[in-house]
Image 1 (cartoon, rainbow, N blue to C red):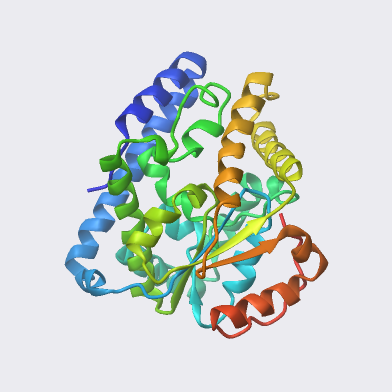
Image 2 (cartoon, helix red, strand yellow):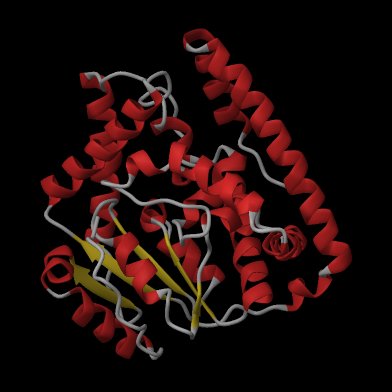
Length: 321
């Protein structure tokens, strides 16, 4: 069963219905279709790939830190190690072994036909996602933050920050929910990780700034996990996140953030930064944003050595967030 936080769902959809009724209708239809596909995929997995339940995730790596501290570039650079397996955006939106096996079969046929479906997909990605490239490169096939797996559940801050009607008016932080709700949501996440490892093999690597407040919960589910914690000067991190959210709003034609929106986003950032500042221990590796800017390849090589994985092949040194 796919969990859903009904209190957040009702609050969000009610606010959207009053402020942006067309958006509310579109989102309701999209979310319903999404949940139907997810449910079919989960059912198919329990019939056609039931041994995913036997998978034990060992020594996973979780990259944490406030948004815009370099989590994306470290995730994607380390994720190219042949020893590691991460989750793409496509996987996080549809975490089903069967659906992805079906997708790969379709892709093989598409290649034989000259890639017509691939070309259409690239056009759609370029129209919808490419405008955000200067701040954050996102594509369905690229590793992305694990928070996207919670989109279907409403148990994510994304249910608040993506629209003026909901930012500051919807509290969707998992740590503010009742314990039983938190557990169901994190079980859903653990399922996604186990299925990904079942499908791809390797040692799991994920990144999720929003989970920086959930280290205790993650450690209880994955006792041998290692946490790579990214840090950055406080005001620089907060300002960079605000610019990203504003860019997303600009892309959607939602206008400028009001002072109340800025205050709500800052309050959320402050909580994350406070949580990150208190993380320490033998299973915590801390890296500062300045080190990434100064020597990305050196930071990646050092982390690979400390994590016990093969060093990824060097790339063209993408810019950190």
